[in-house]
Amino acid sequence: MGKSILVCAILFTVIIPRDADGIENNYRFLYESGNYAKAISHITPLLESDPENHFLWYYLGRSHQHLMQYDEAVRAFYNVLEIDSTYLPVYFHLGRIYTETGEFDTAIELLEQAHSFDRENTTILYFLAGVYSRDERYDEALDALNLGLQLDPDDRRFLRRYADLTFRLNKFEESAQAYRSLIELGDSSAVVFRNCGISLYFLEDNPNALRCLSTAYYLDDTDPNTVLYFGLVHRAIGNIRFAIGLLNDTVALLSKGMLSDALIHLAGAYEATRDIPDAVKKYRLVLDLNADRPEAYYYLASVFDK
Image (cartoon, rainbow, N blue to C red; front, side, top):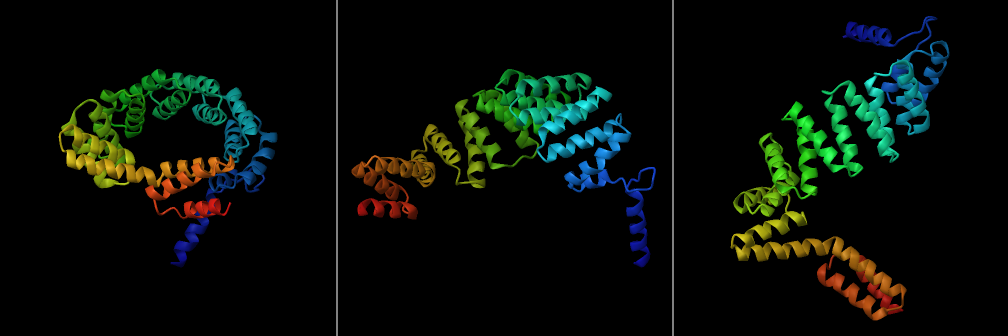
């Protein structure tokens, strides 16, 4: 036991880098430990003596990036590119920074350049697809996702993003196929089964829609969209009693959430304009829909006090 501790201690001492003078140069250790401010304080003097070391500039940029000091991070990263214009990680992290700051054109330009250096790098391609989507360049996003799926048809990251994007764009044939592929690969999340079922419902494939939505409902019976479309499929295949029950459940779920919230705010707006009768009606409607909203009782009582 004692020997093991001694060996570990020796190894730990050896892996900490040292500079030529024997002073501990442990910026990598500090960075990987999440101590970014101290990492910066160690890297800065090292750069004075070795300004062409692109690894030092890279870790300086990453440290500033973690601290959300984006201007400093960008300067450091561009210094890396002046030394080595093909260093791919820098393009990726610059793309992330410009995406965070809403400068999508610059982010896309950098990521496209990185992709041109390595057309089989799926990490860059996946992030590029995400930036295209955020910039509402959906055709280019789908092209990037399809390219990623050509490189690896079983990559769940690309499949899920492709499925979600086509679903959002009402491309239900594509989304249904992608969600089915995810299920075949072992994705058992309620959202995947729900969106697969909704896609199939709009394609009028009600038997398969029923199977997907039944699984989604089993996994999560509190999601209003799952319950709604489960009811709609039952109605479409003639199970009217099941449909009525599920659609009533949908109303109940909505009344406990956004609908009650909206009514409370609407009542408050009426109250602010001194329209007390309408304020009372809305607060009472909240309680009719959902008696478990204590704040509605309080607001209603305060209105009566006025």
